[in-house]
Image (cartoon, rainbow, N blue to C red; front, side, top):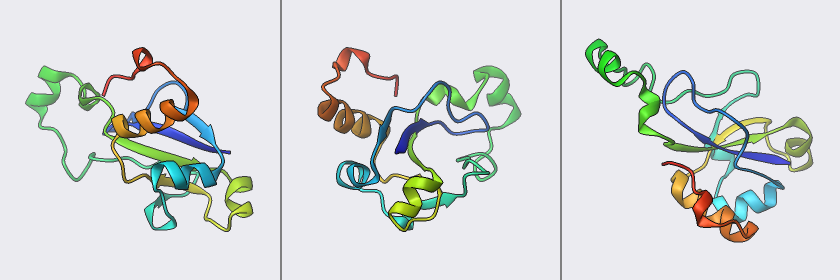
Length: 120
C-alpha cells in the first residue's frame, strides 16, 4: 500500500500518521501522481522550503516555527513491495494537488466527515 501524507515546510514536515493508505492505482486516479513526481528515496524523506527560502532569525523568534503555516504539500510514500509490483522506484513522490484538495478527494471516497478536516 502507498501512504498519503500531508507535509509541512521545514525540518519537521509531519506528525502522526498518514492521511490514507491506498493501492498505487487509487493514488494515480485520485491524486494524479506520476513517476515524474519522485522526490527522494525511502532513506531520506524530502524537506521543502528549508534552504531555498530560509526564515530570517527575527521571523523564527517571533513566529517560532515554519510549521505555523500548516500543511503545504501532499506526499506519497511508496514502499518497496508496492513500487516493485507497479514498476516504480520506491520512495517519496510530491503529489500535484494541495492538501485541502487531497483531503476532499480522499475523504469523499472514504466517507469521512468534513468536521474531521485537518488544519491547512
